[in-house]
Amino acid sequence: MAPLAEDLLAAGAGRTERMKGFVEEIGKRFEFHRGNFNPESVEAASAALARLYELFDVAPVPRRALHDGKSTIVVKAARWQDQHRELRDLLVPGSGPAATVQGEVVRIAGRIWHELDDNGGVNWDGDFGRMADAYLRHVQTGSPLPDHEIREAAAIVAQIKANFGNPARLVELAVAWVLANPKPIKLAPPPYRR
Image (cartoon, rainbow, N blue to C red; front, side, top):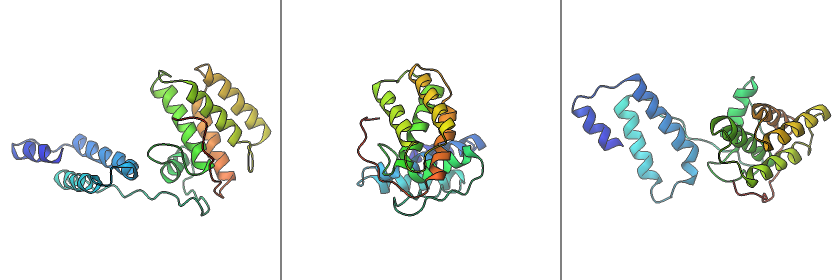
């Protein structure tokens, strides 16, 4: 991408705010998945991204610092939506299950929300159902959600397994559970592959 952008800019293409936004989005995605890159090519990809930042005068996206799995989980944001974003960036790996139950609860809720709201449930399969069941088990452990919220989560899980319901509320409840359980709990290998 960087050599192509260089050629286009040299040929007179103008830089737009939209282009800058695309470069920033590339940076965000790269940093989220950096840990999953092939170690032999990650530095080349990082250098190409640095060149795109330079070409389009975009401030580099900070490198992602994943939680160490041991220290207390601390959230700075106030709104649950922002807390979810913060927790996702801190606890959820670029692919595969999280290292902690807290990260997995956040990951599962986010995956279900994305699948139903963004994909219309087209990829829904048995693994998503098992993830939803695991979510429900997890939020009943440690300092569990209050009984009325567990009943609400169970009803939402039943609804989403029928491909309707409110997955955003599962995300909100995931955040509430993690905030009530800031001491990391190691995740056992899950019974699903998504």
